[in-house]
Amino acid sequence: MTTDQYGFDTLAIHAGQDPDPRTGAVVPPIYQTSTYAQDAVGAPRLGYEYSRSGNPTRDALQECLAAIEGGRRGLAFASGLAAEDTLLRTICRPGDHVVIPNDAYGGTYRLFAKVAERWGLDWTAAPLDDPDAVRAAFRPGHTRLIWAETPTNPLLNIADIPALAALAHEYDALLAVDNTFASPYLQQPLALGADVVIHSTTKYLGGHSDVVGGALVVADPGLGDELGFHQNAMGAVNGPFDAWLTLRGIKTLGVRMDRHCDNAERIVGFLSEHKKVSSVLYPGLDTHPGHETAAKQMRRFGGMVSFRAAGGAEQAIEICNRAKLFVLAESLGGVESLIEHPGQMTHLSAAGSALEVPADLVRLSVGIETVDDLLADLEQALG
Ligand SMILES: *Cc1c(COP(=O)(O)O)cnc(C)c1O
Image (cartoon, rainbow, N blue to C red):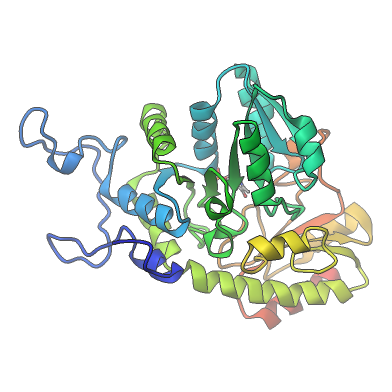
């Protein structure tokens, strides 16, 4: 299908998913096969020869990912971190340097600090909402990439995508944006000047907490080809069933995101008034330092809400333990609401580093349940 004539929800449901020409199946089949019969030596049918290199179910997902991010090429991986690793090793060489957010997702930080660094890749953590600090972190000639996340996990800081793109391009570097928290329904970084979009499709794109996956989307076909080469050469691809589950999740992304946002807004209102909450972190609040930037580049402000407990770390942990409907669990972006203590859970690997998160912080992934039930659960958990 040609993608420029259709709206977001149409693309989410149809891009890459024309009915199967042989059977008419409306949903792309799960091609659960590792290899493909060839019609003659050197003549693979439809170009498929081995499922690490290509699989029709994964291709359907990749086409859909490209369409909903407004890119030319989408690539699907076994996890968000597999996508990140493939991106790093495609773009960077030993001796290169990357600017990363000083509140990056814990696993991203660990990939840079504990893995990539050993292979000679240098990095600097900078506050990405401060353009002067990002400029100061740049090492002209060595910095290949600004790695942005917006909103960030779990502090929900906002980076100005067009401003960072301009800065990166001024130094012949690229801007990669981890768009996991916003999802392409709320924010499309390529249209704002970014070169690469990163996703943990485990989160909002999959949307049902039943599959782990990752993605990269780019606008430049040359960069797409390089990433495609590394996707095959490094081999961190997702399987056909995982690709199918992710594709099924994407169909309802728009309606889910609207409900995530509706529910999050109600919860933010409730928490903002609560005496046991010292502050609420949500880019939709006009008191949030990134509110104006967020309003420019996001359709709405998303389903992730963090807050700080007035009673400190102990109380934050107590709230997490007392919640019932909010499931105490890592991850985010599924239909069910989750609660967690980043300091002891998702961001434990950043403890003692510049990326350590406040101990009184609680993070909510607001699901799409009946909002009054979510409010009642928070009420009892806050005590
Ligand atoms: C979860 C997450 C990742 C890592 O993705 P996995 O699918 O868990 O490998 C990267 N970035 C952000 C913002 C995330 O929330």
